[in-house]
Length: 503
Image (tube, rainbow, N blue to C red):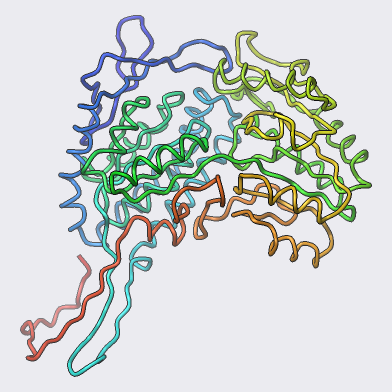
């Protein structure tokens, strides 16, 4: 960040191991969502800026790829320690630009740290296979090798965790990375870049380019970018996938969601109500894994709605730097868009049980506030059901049976996450087998997998064949090579009585 007189500081690119203001004069505003004030400006990349970053990454890739796994892992462990020590500092940055409460921001960093720790095991994860003597003096073995330059385009709602789904694995596997974070909360990416430098990562292996569609489109078409990882809305994810694959790139594009929580009549309704509130209004509902629809299987709906509403009344809303349950939305424009669905829901015939516009707020009146909202008697034809609202709006749909609930979930075009609440093991097992969703929770409302499993949905929630992190992530950022080898004469390397060392 570069101060310019009395103007807000400028968030610059990070290219080839140092801050870079770029060649473009275009800038964006960065807001404090709790006050509505502009606190920073961020530079927007031109095509030339993106080309400069790709060139730096391409140059760095050759040497980084040739660096031994032992040395690469040392850098990963050093970065892990720096990230671990900096959790609170990074959480403060996230809260100041995104608005989520400090504890939620720290939790985001902790979940990203899990992927860094998983990537520290890359020497094991990159092991190939070996078959000796498949024919006379003939051996066959496989290798996993890096793909080159990888671009990561991440969303505003998790400025630390989502990039961490990708870049630790890409870097540990020997690739170079260009991260294009959201322009709404860009500073976390630069903080991460500085920690990589302190950890000893060579310049150019991790780069940050800020901006808008200009930067994204150039990354999608650049001939030296070999892979693209994207998380965002479904229309943009589809555009990213179709564009990047047209230019011959490997793509994993994670799109939007409409996550259902099915509550069966035998469920613990107190647990279900707690979970619906936690999963519906954490981070002001700005989560791709947020529960946005509760599917109440009768006769539990009346009791469940009452329990949810009672818990909502106790939620505190205010500046995320203080001890409140829920913070503001990320921008004024996004808050207004989400708030418009409240009128749309009432107009379509849904029952507005709790109106978030009337919820008390402890904060600056100019902040981007909208309290938790609850609709009942929602139907699948309503706009509040069909659209991904991405805010603190929870809808309840009443159904008469498990089969009706399952059909509702399965006919939805999204397939990111779902949950079922029940004390019937047979019903839970049937649901996990029959539901057409990528991530399933059983009495767990936000089933985000741990780092050594993979994150990703089905249907319109994922474009591309590979999910994020876990083994899928390792496979995405590497290519398999199979070698068939025959050696006719033995050889040796001379006498050396020293204990062998890994270098």
